[in-house]
Image (cartoon, rainbow over all chains, first blue to last red; front, side, top):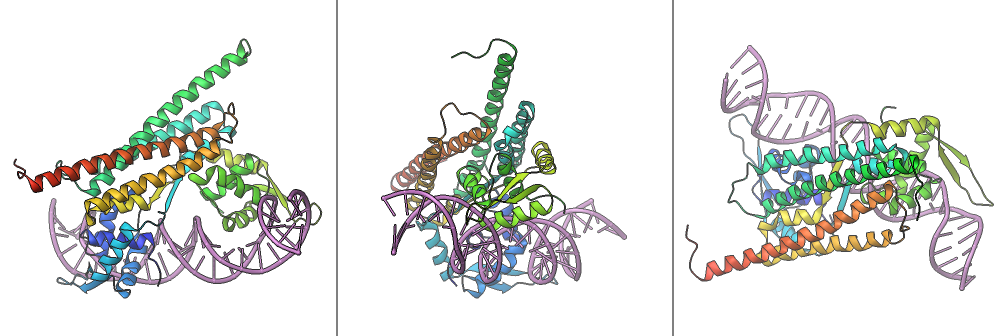
Length: 191
Length: 191
DNA sequence: GGCCACATGTAATATGTTACATGATTGT
DNA sequence: ACAATCATGTAACATATTACATGTGGCC
């Protein structure tokens, strides 16, 4: 086996931060890394088995009563691999997929009004994501401060910035549309 | 066949904007949508065939000399499907994958210095992406203005914002580390 | 002649989501 | 009794990347 995938590293990291079961990994991820690196059960459970086979985590059956449960912890090797990745200077994977932005990109195929509507929708969707984020933030203790909170702050700041930028873009587009309309009606543009 | 995938729509849209061959679709995508919706040859060529089978694009063999070439254009149905998507109000797919941010999120597993280094790396990587973007921007005519330019402006503004935010985060982290050091050395924190 | 850009395509692989199956425990 | 939550897992499917194979045409 060569390098781990980023998703494997998320799982490793979350166990490092205290998640014990696959279920907990998923829960932690959903309220924390989800925004910038999500993971589904279909990845988590098989990946935990792979990490165990590779000796990076140690799993232990931890049945209480009739509940089947498997608790994992990092091994020494797992900690080393995790730390090596955290300080590595290899280029980081970065990708964005934004369907709303795609719509705006193709805005030349739309009327002025339709384009403005697409921009407003983009802003509204970011505003909705922001609300959900703030709900998570409100559950964080006020004086708590660690890196996970820094990442949360980034998410919130990012969404706020987006709401502002697209609000501004909408304003600019409206002004443009008005100007174009005046030019069509009245005196042609002279420069 | 039910709905198209966003990637199919990118291809449809790029043909709508004037790309004719699979090769051109890839080229256009690489200098425009790549930042928020990339596509590889492995998707483009098979997808073009599917779109043609669905009657959304019409392909025509356009061999000049010995060069095998297939030129596509939107059909009426293709234009309608594209327009319907552009104005649809279904929720838009949005996802971000940022490995650098992931590293920072796990920063509690690092020393102060290592965390600061991770943050600086994140900023530097955004700065590098920004440079590449500005190179694309410089090739755009000054007075050109359309939606694709708006999307480019968004990309640049986004990266600039990131560089600023992470510069500021680094500053805050350094201040925190100094404060913590003072407290360890001198009078203990009292509250 | 050699290199690069143009051009099309596929196979293997990797990655990721969704939906489903299964069952215990806890709270109302 | 019922719903929600805890808990594990897989199969089918969807999506995407990488690497390779193949060949032309233009330029130096």
